Image 1 (cartoon, rainbow over the protein chains, first blue to last red):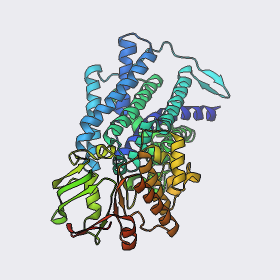
Image 2 (tube, each protein chain N blue to C red):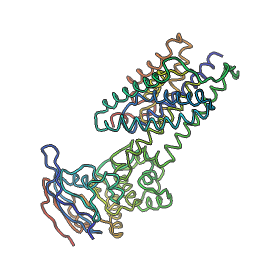
Image 3 (cartoon, rainbow over the protein chains, first blue to last red):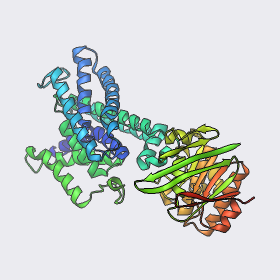
Image 4 (cartoon, chains in turn blue, brown):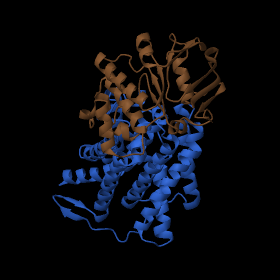
Length: 291
Length: 215
């Protein structure tokens, strides 16, 4: 009973991490920078949905869609104003810029909404459905379904759309892509928009499951970062696989360890992979960071 | 009609002169052989034409229009294609994807016809990384064919390629010549270059040392 419940909890957590990890890996693949403000983009998305659904009183699905659109615009703005001017600098400068954006977004949200916890007012506490030895709420089912649907959409974007194909080309060899007429800056902006839209969607789902506060994006982003490393940097299937791996192991791990160690389990896995398999589960040894 | 004109191109890397005051004109439909020792500036010249690097001074004109002030992707869109010495394919894409990413056409029949012409249609759904060096060059030729580039820059396309694939590449170049494409070829084999080209330019330490008509 407990084990099945922990597996389900792991799948829910993995679904949330995956939406952030996909954007992180897409942006890393194309720019070779770790977008540490990605979690804050998710957090801003969650607050946009809060404004639409709680402040304006519109249905939460409307807020969800508005958050996705706002996330895409925010991602493009972060690229345009924080990363693009530093494109020719060392990647560490980009990393510092990402941290600065992260702090800036946290403080802007704190300024307007305060540091106290907020919720979506989803009504009285849901009674979970009991099946196959575990309990799951309708909100949790919705989180898994929406996350999986967005992952399928990502696959379609990458494999079937012209922009997705061009994004893969720019990630593989930017100079070659440009020599074939691909406007790499436009592709980078589109990738930021797509990845950030997914992050905003992830932010709303996380806020539905927990609550909203200006720091809510920090830990899921670190977990998503761990998932990207575990799955294989630059690989979207790897990011998804890594997310579920982290989600499941940290939840199943607390069957054996006190629940306070949950976050530590994810970081322990990250350290193990960095030491013994830095290319991740699906990564190849000579690709990724060195390329 | 003049397809390509270079006016007084100079390029320096720090204190090293890669190109100095290089000027020439190339008529449409002609094939120019670019020869010279290692470090003479041949690849740098192609990089300047495609704007992979910017010249310190000088101008590049394509079909009468100045292009050295455009970004690389806009120059490529004018119809200038290139085959690279190394790293000219997207390894993680299939052969068909390698063709489609370079063009707005999603016509699979057209792509298959071109892959058939370069002898790679059997491998159309395989990852490009699985191809041999010669096959990768042929795939690059397929890409300039599907893009219908008018000026094609070939950077040592025969280097490290098997005899069979060299023949195939020569055959493809012959076909492009018949279609009236303008070509610049960097090549070390003097017999081959004389067989393929109409004109020769020799670079020596970045300077245009000699210009010869073969016709």
